[in-house]
Image 1 (cartoon, rainbow, N blue to C red):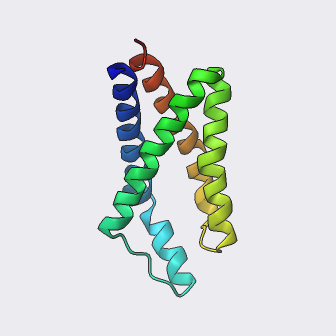
Image 2 (image 1 turned 90 degrees about the vertical axis):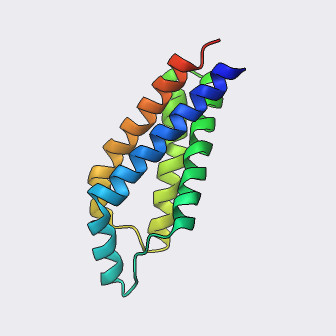
Length: 126
């Protein structure tokens, strides 16, 4: 039981780290500029970070659960579609998604899910 828990925790930490690097360090200016063009302010508050942390660990658990039931690639594709594509559709519908960011976000999010899946596969074995 400890190994699967460790695997989910490691994958959750990786997802959190990856999201932080991408959205706060690499591409925050995209978000700020896009929000400014919409006459909105893009803020980063502690509560946002807490929700992203929760989101990351939920995604890690989803990947873990899928990997128990489906093939590796099917699990990762399904988790990626459920987490990222659904989020982007919602953000686009709310008219706050900077579309040019997807050029970077799509491959980086696929890499994020791949590494999380590998962490779960390696560290989740009993």
